[in-house]
Image (cartoon, rainbow, N blue to C red):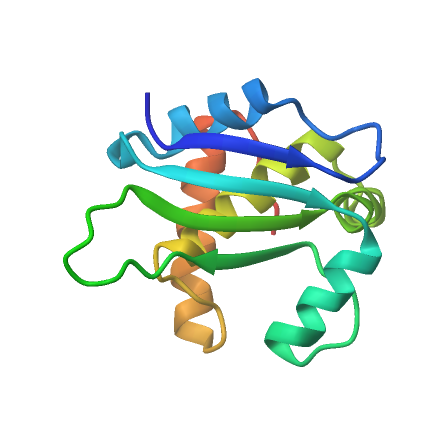
Amino acid sequence: MALQAELQHVATAEDVPPQAQFQQWLDTTFPELDGQTVLIRVVDPGESCQLNRDYRGKDYPTNVLSFPFEVPEGIPNAHLGDLVICADVVAQQAQDQGKPVQHHWAHMLIHGVLHLLGYDHIEADEAETMESIEIRLLEKLGIPNPY
């Protein structure tokens, strides 16, 4: 088993994958993270907007927010961090982009974990690197290039 998922589902969207699906995606795409954990919190637009405003200064709901866990020095810990995914934003983006919603869920999970691992997409070269990794990992799941 790779990265261990723990799902907190607080949104009401019907198309949220079950914890077992998140775990399968993680097992397939991040086997090198065996023994580590990630908390996945699925939220509504209100909570996403509040967190995005509080932590990024952006006053709108977003698809995924990543919160790496900062382990105090000398404390052993296997928690990689937390992901907050807004179910309504993921569903709307999938519809707008004409892709299966489950493919977009997998993409947002991978995207969020890459942020937890220190990847970013602020600069063009960073975005190119991150997107190429996402494309490669999504291919492992049989999901076509989302870009």
